[in-house]
Length: 172
Image 1 (cartoon, rainbow, N blue to C red):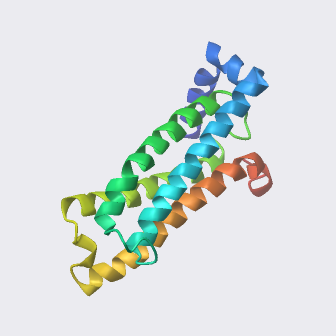
Image 2: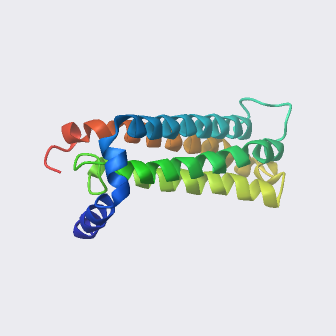
């Protein structure tokens, strides 16, 4: 698996676009800025949905209404994060590339966060009162909502720690 990831990154990094990302400082800085701002929008939107589902905020709106309002922002921001992240990978060196444990941790966290977000959204779209039908579901909502937000927060932290992954994983 590591060899496949290394080969893919090497092929991806040898594209003509790589020089403009890795070689021109303002391009990389702009991509990183857009990436971070999109993550901020994603966290805010997930935060609003999660706080409402957990019963901690936004009580003037139903959870389904909150999902309806913020889901377009979540998925649009995620698309921007994906595109800018992919472009940033073109200029990623060995310490930030696909084969690093910190990058792989970030991807696992992100996949879990996407799954939790989709679960919250799809259940509320199919049935508006899904998380309030019985005490068990209410209790699950109070666990799922903060867990979803925490997964996204840990994803952001893992992304930031990519620059310092060599400290945590010196042999990688």
